[in-house]
Image 1 (cartoon, one colour):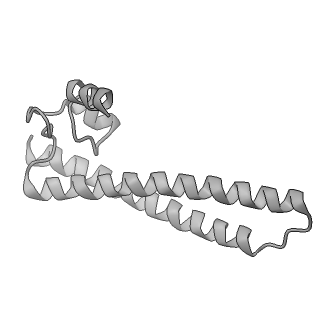
Image 2: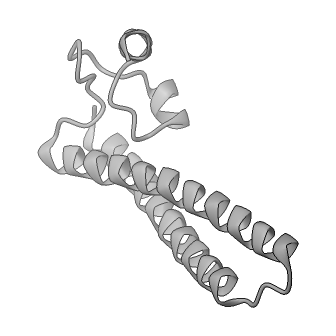
Image 3: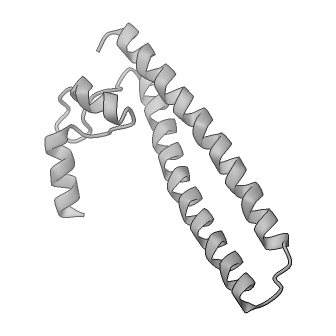
Length: 116
């Protein structure tokens, strides 16, 4: 993969990273506000508890994506970005367009999903 193509994906990954960091920060603030709000009855308490759980689940998923992005940015620095970690073939750019933090080509990803 050429340096200009890697730079393109580096920019995409950095932009997504910034989005995730903003979102995680916003969710933290929302969770804090929910936890600090006063529940007037059991329904309020249940709503606050449910909303907090949903917010925390979303944040956890975003943190995993953030880790994958950091890993991919490291691979760009190493010069191994866009190479499947299983078969060591190039990952198709069409796949990287959809998921720039992809570690596997489509064929190997299917194998990983079936064995997980």
